[in-house]
Image (cartoon, rainbow, N blue to C red; front, side, top):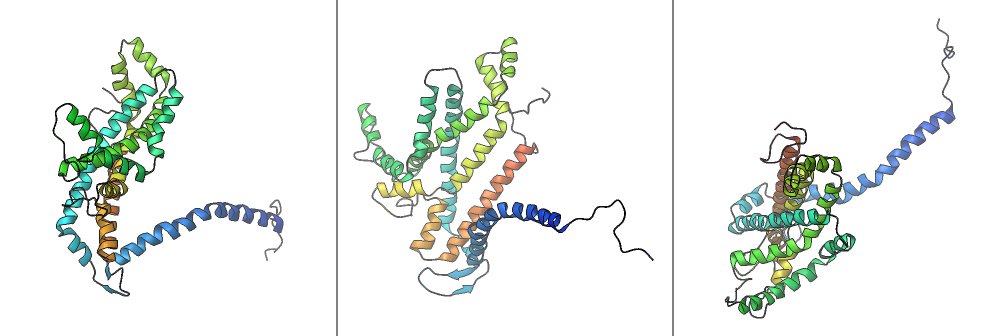
Length: 326
């Protein structure tokens, strides 16, 4: 019969060693546990609860709920104001994201050059981002005022008639986009600047030896090196545009119409404003939850698009990976 004694040459693990191994494992899980606790409490649970509410008819003022399935989504996709808010979200997102990132890229390129007071200008870039969205929106609402706005006064000095910024469709969206551009351009410029400083200087020296101009170096060295950063800022800005809420709401309040309708004819109502209106003005929590989940799906699609772009499955003309053949 085989002996029950320990095999020769194979040391036995003592109780102290076992406790030490357990302590290492428990300590590691203990360090990461707070993140998962907070994520489940404030991330996953609200997401699942919103999905549950979206499938019910719930009112903000009445207790109880009833199962309606996908009726809230059916009503939402057939609603005129939802389609309008979705289109407004897309157009305001384009009007704010494209100029914002182009200006940020140019400012980052200037700040990356050897110049006096670079630290001062970098700090100045973050001041709009540090400004309260309420203060920024209310100030810009006064700037774009129809009767006594600063911008219309400047236009009048060159003989241009005053523009009704808030009541107009495109003019109001341009005004809201201007607030977003002002607040986020400096933030993205610093992100681009950090990425530019990570580009090896040898690439610029080799390009200069080959006779490349400053513009050619920027186009053929800087831009390809910044491709992942540019795609990141595009996705983050697109997500921010999908969730846009504070700027249009407070711009409406500054224009004397403190409600989430986005103007008298919903001309700049975004999906965030529509969700707020459905929940706290109309009192329909189910429809508001359906809108929230629609926004969530849109964000997932934008993130998936970013993944495909970064992996190279979808290529952007003019931006090649480093080391790719010409």
